Image (cartoon, rainbow, N blue to C red; front, side, top):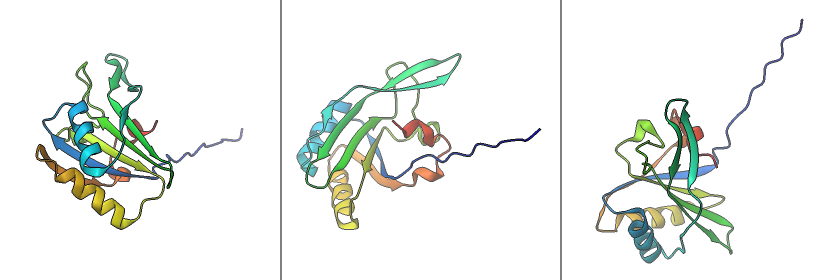
Length: 140
């Protein structure tokens, strides 16, 4: 009997910035829009299945699309209202800022500086999604 092995690779073609802040998600979104010149707006929550005992968890999500560059911006909460954590190995981070499609180094640096310049943001640092154990939770 032949054995077939299925290999798959997650599409992790995005930039990930971890944000630590005491702000509520809608306030952080407002300040990111103000400081970075984006137009983030509330969209459907990001839903994941944690385990059979914990069930579904919903994480707040905001999105913006730059028409000129077709770059997508997402702000995701790391904690759900039900008490779950989106990325357990990054419990110290409160939010994740995802940037999909092309963005050059200058734009990325300017965006990161804009987010870090928000007074209530403690840390805004780029992390590699490939190094996360629960990276599949960031796919939507």
